[in-house]
Length: 342
Image (cartoon, one colour):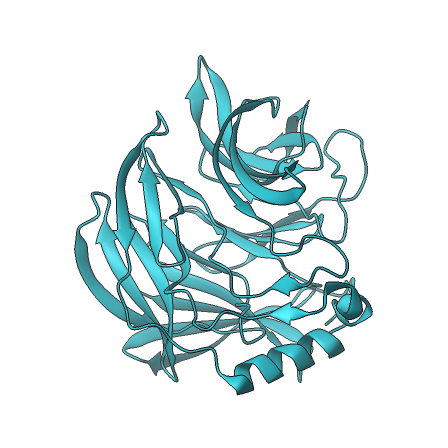
């Protein structure tokens, strides 16, 4: 893992290769510390770090703006190592969520205003407006009957909770109680006036309307993939040796694995389609099952995905018919932006 560095930004276009019938363009990016996510709109790409944002032109990937710093003042972000900022570019403004605050910037990265939050909301996503005020989807945590839960909540513009629409037990319930790996994905998306959340098990996705009623469920009916002994061994070794987890390994032990991988690895929505990424992997990539916004199956594709660990992908975004992914090149001390035509 790299520490955040301040070095001269260099962006150069690399080769175009053919992979699994996908045209993959590679761009070399320097002056990135530890990117945590990517966000894309029609004109720009945004790379998000803990408290810093890089804006690039979507046409030539030239750097347009870099902004963001830690702090509690206007235009500043209060963060923790495990609680980074989140960015939503789906409106005509950049909406940035940090600890108990929602900040608004222009698409050029100019500060407009901020709203103090009444609650903590992680991974903030703009949903719609209610009486002219924004509503958001966010991740919140709560304790109930001696268990800790991760919840998906609808928040108002001040991060006041409107409605909880999903909850699941946290895989970590406290020191000495172990950690459950490969639980079902925890994700939520707002697309075309629909809310996508995990289903009742690791093989399904529920689609809600804006009244939070269930419209339909997508079930991924595949032969389950066995979690092998080698996979378990590799993950234990990674957790024992990674700088992020080695100092807390004893606290999170024992590590527990399911017998099978969940069929749903991750899910995305783009251009009126739902893309469900499964754990079916080959040298060419992961198998994706594709549906329309009414839940009708339309086909499947193998899409190239790069992994940082056996279970964790590098930051990626599926937008405008393209897959954007940042991949670390340890040998060259740089990050590569891979853009795949889908």
